Length: 264
Ligand SMILES: Nc1ncnc2c1ncn2[C@@H]1O[C@H](COP(=O)(O)OP(=O)(O)OP(=O)(O)O)[C@@H](O)[C@H]1O
Ligand SMILES: [Mg+2]
Image 1 (cartoon, rainbow, N blue to C red):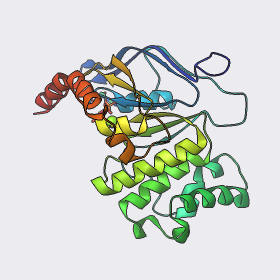
Image 2: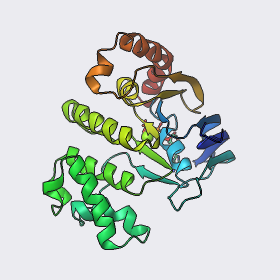
Image 3: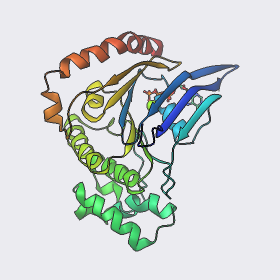
Image 4: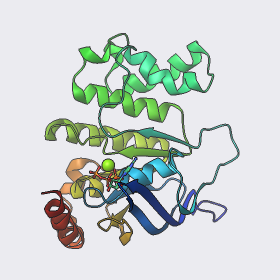
C-alpha cells in the first residue's frame, strides 16, 4: 500500500476468455491481487497459464470479461504503464538512442530532452558507445538492455516486464539481472515481472505470485525475504535460497508437468 493506504495496482475478480474454434478458452479466472507503490512483484506459473495475458490486461491492451484492473495515478503526467515484451521488441530501423527515446517521443517530449534522458540511462547500462548503432549491430543482450531502458525512460506508474531475459544465455541473464536490480533500486518503480525462472523471481522480486495452470488463478503469494540492496551473488548465497526455491517448485511442479503433458 502507498502512503495513502491505496494500492498502486489493483486486479479484482478478473476473468479473461478467448474464442477457440466453436468454444472458448478461459485464460484467467477469479484473479485478484494488489501491488503497493514501489513493490517489485514477480509472476511465475506454468506455460500457457495466462501470464502474458495478465500483463496485456494491466497494459490496457486487452479487456477482462469480468472484473477490473486499476492503476492508481499519483496525479502527475506520468504514463500509467510501459511494457518490455516477451522476445525482441526494439525497432530495427531506429538507432539505439532513437529506440531508447521512442516512448518519450510518443509522449511529445522534445528531441533534446528525450535524448538527454535516454542517453543518461544508456550510459548507465554500458551502452554509451553504441548510441548511434542499429539493433542489428548489437548482441541479443544489448538489444534487451535497450528495450528495458525504453520502458524505464518514460517513468511509468507501473513497469511491466514479460520474460525480459527469457531468450538470453545464462551469463548474460545474470549480468542483466544485476543491472535491473541497480536501476530498480535507484528508481523504486512499481514492477510486475513475469518469468519462467523461479530463481530469477527470487533474485529480483519482493514478492512472488504463483499462478496455477489455466485458467490461471493465484495459488500462492510469497514474500521474498532477502535484504536489499541485492546482487545475484548475495541472493544466491543466502542460506534461505534453496529452501524457498524448493517451496515454490513444490507449488508449481504438478501444474508444470501437466502443462508439458498437455503440449505433447
Ligand atoms: N489473442 C488470443 N487469442 C486466443 N487465445 C489466446 C490469445 N492470447 C492468449 N490466448 C490463450 O490464453 C492462454 C494463456 O496465454 P498466455 O500467452 O497468457 O500464457 P503465458 O502464461 O504467457 O504462457 P508462456 O509462459 O508460454 O508465455 C493460452 O491458452 C493461449 O492459447
Ligand atoms: Mg507469455
